[in-house]
Image 1 (tube, helix red, strand yellow):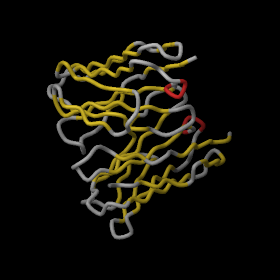
Image 2 (cartoon, rainbow over the protein chains, first blue to last red; image 1 turned 180 degrees about the vertical axis):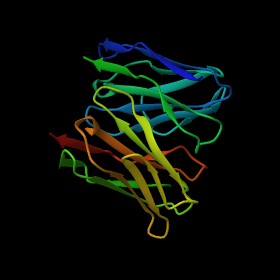
Image 3 (cartoon, chains in turn cyan, purple; image 1 turned 120 degrees about the vertical axis):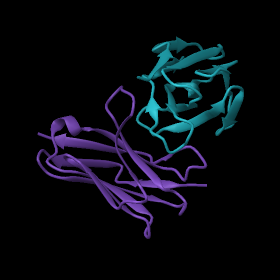
Image 4 (cartoon, rainbow over the protein chains, first blue to last red; image 1 turned 135 degrees about the vertical axis):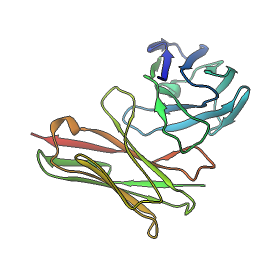
Length: 113
Length: 111
């Protein structure tokens, strides 16, 4: 069966520090991968999605970037964190179609101080 | 692009009553409509979905209805229980772009 992992589970970082969050999927090949951010008590904001290695689509211009170095690995990065980057970061995957069931990872809770 | 509106933003019901959450979408090409439940501090999880070739789908106490003409779909929860308390998200996709989510409904079931 398929499994999605995210780490770290929680992170406290100072303003201006770099960020790297990792997501990996097991048990499937060539998935679509997604990064969402959820501010406290708010909805799901799609940040990036990828349909294949090296292919990244950005939904929101900001100080974050994403990379997909391997088929089942998706990385979210920042060179300098802002206070507004605090939130719950969720990775998700689907099969090769956008209308296949989307499964979310356990999330990373980021607090920027 | 697609736009999904979800109402209400908060909903309180007595245990045993029914709850209804409604969503409207803008892209007439959308034909996949999932619903997710997110408990406090957890990840969203799919609870039911519907595709445009059917008008209604049921799974025990949960049902979803779809009206393609009016471009709206609804989640119905019957005989609500305290464990139904969560945030519920609707979403829509035409197949050409990722899911577009509504802003969520916080459901509280009062025992």
